[in-house]
Image (cartoon, rainbow, N blue to C red; front, side, top):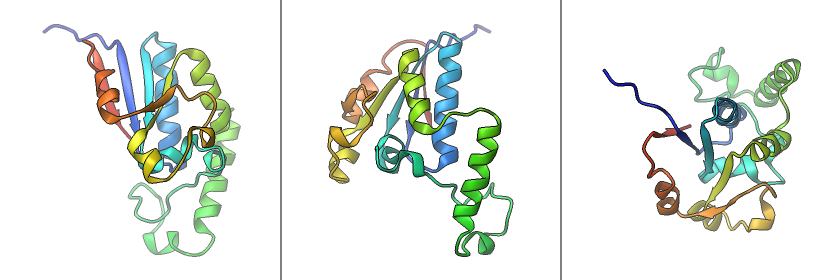
Length: 158
């Protein structure tokens, strides 16, 4: 059996829950550390992870999250989402995980490309000035897919 060499990984981030945003960034960072090209395409609510006013205020989803170690009814109680988010951020700080804005700077400096989805930007009435400076641009989905037209490219949806 022949081995497929991964040369490029494109991540699509459609949710801005803190765990989803960090999953995309950690995986993109790991790819860059292995010498693999990496890009993140932020679409729909994933745009919150690159929107200046929202990026450092992401939360953990406590309702409708099957991985949450508590009954859904408890997750819906007032303050539970804030508490769970605070606890997760504290654990991430212990592991020396940078805040989202710093992590995006690190990724950009490593050569990871950061793209915003044009449809979502238009839908949420955002402008490029609302988004992080490290953004490489705003792409249509067709433009994004054309970036995958290289042998050894994988697309991962988060």
